[in-house]
Length: 422
Image (tube, rainbow, N blue to C red):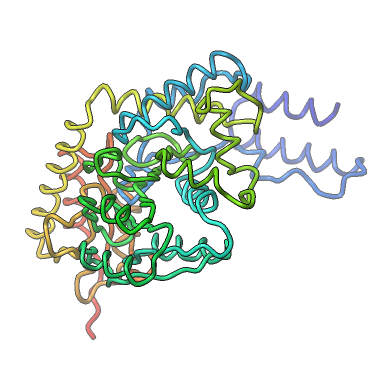
């Protein structure tokens, strides 16, 4: 009762420093007469403070007011008909964004990384052979996950900043004869956009399924799941879709579904078992059964992110991201900076990588933009650490005015940050 009174007083009173000092004193006195040995955390007795920042890193991106409002709606039950209707609308939105008619299309209750794990552990069993294209951290992660599943993993390697040619891939398929080939469409750690044309047909000719990571590219670069014969495609909610991380679109072709039905063993994770998930999402034509308590408000946010993409139109979204990326690249060159990805066609429109200018500490540049301009950009990740700065223009953040803001901030950083004399 005493604790309830303290919290009630906190809600009713102002946030003046004197009040909070008194509140902390009351909490301490309460603890002196209580059997509890761990006091209330002082940080939780202060109001939540969230700064305003422009998120121009590789993700997450800023969330528009419409999506914030959707996520703040009151909860409904995860089996309520209204929620199931939202889930059906999400499925249709994913099918539009992926350009697919696959019925086994849904959103994983987790981040894009969770979708990667779901795809791999449902497709692969112990002893299966997988070929993983590695030209950045996401290929490395996929290879790591696949090894944990007990599969035989072969890596197809390219240096960061380069992409794979059909000849590279065909040689790997012929040599290793995998059942699954993994490749990243938008490698956000290096800024590379991987061409997908012909890869599905190539994989199928070698009796292999094509698994594509599109977390960083969905909505920013063209992708046609059915036309390009992609068997499994997944993405995330926190980049071009501008929703908070927590619900990840994924889709399986009929060929992928048939392979999963022929499994000799159950998937290692019950939570990520696509058989159960597909039923909950209404993908199998059977009555929906409870599987897990879904993140309902994340579904509301994802639904609105997909709705905004549908209203804008995929082609308009692709064009906007390409135009703003081109403007950013030209502005970076005008500042005397060197783009990391040499070929223009291989540059990811959503995340641009630029070499750290000689003599500068990348950490100081990143910190300067945050401290002086409230703008987030990022350094490298994985093999690109220390080599590049990564600038993201995704969804509502992909605007001409944001390009101007980040270029102005970088100009200021190059002028003010101390250069090494070595």
